[in-house]
Length: 400
Image (tube, rainbow, N blue to C red; front, side):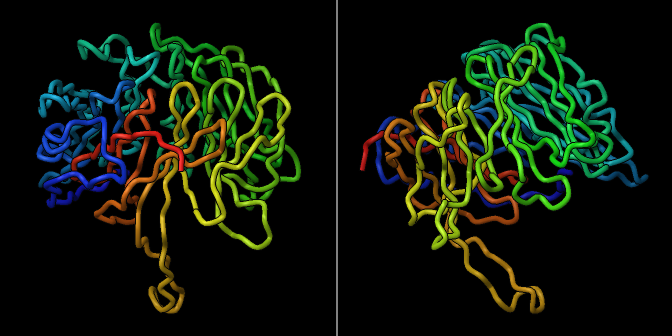
């Protein structure tokens, strides 16, 4: 559920990167000066890194106890330093008995950047032409999110980088141990769906779809304790009929999952060493389930959400440093974020090719999120549940 407050302080300049190239300085400064009209739920950077789309929304309780809900998309043109499109999401206004919930589950550029796809607060997917910003298609998720909302269920979504396919998965609450559906974003029609066996020990978790839409990956989690499964914890399915292609085990309990190209997936896992509790990126062949390489060294501790360029060559992950406050929250202790960065790895070599300077402000519990553009040239950092303007980091891929 979206919070109703907003942060009033906006940063006047973008944080500099360790490598400076690509995005003109005036464009960076212009983006920083743009003020958001409401708290941000999620954001996306266009395939070529030229535009930033943001999902904004606000819920205000009226004197009679009802709620006034507003949600809209804005597209920011970096070269012109202005908002070039504002698209109202009208369906959320129909909700008046509660604050809008589940907003910001998904916003992304799909099908080679031709479409900007957004999921609204009350079960509708909006498909916009990414050039004209006209709404081309809308389709309802068939009560899937209605079943999830407020009942302990989880929703995860993904679209393919170069094909018109959109996937949604849910588990928990009335959704049981999981269901995944695939839609054609041009027609809005459901392509197929798959349900997890109710007798299985594992429930569906995160999903990912390959760049061309030919494959869909599902992360399985222990339905009772969310610990290491005794069997396979990743399923690879056909992207159009959802038939099982392969399944395999990573040996622990991954915290993130994406495709890196068509034949490999990346997970965020504990490093396979008894002497380290840090998490790393690990690359897996989707057919054999063989681990091909580890992408982060023992000195770094990476976190999801992770993202990749459309060709799968470059992988982005957040690097967050914590401080344990032993006497906070009574005597229970608390982990506080002390530093936020992100890094980019070359999938083929496993080498880190870029690392950002630390960025702020540090806002918990959601904190900052980072994503790489599909061409791998730009990273976007944004702060959910705030009015802090997203920031762009131009990336010059130089091996260390």
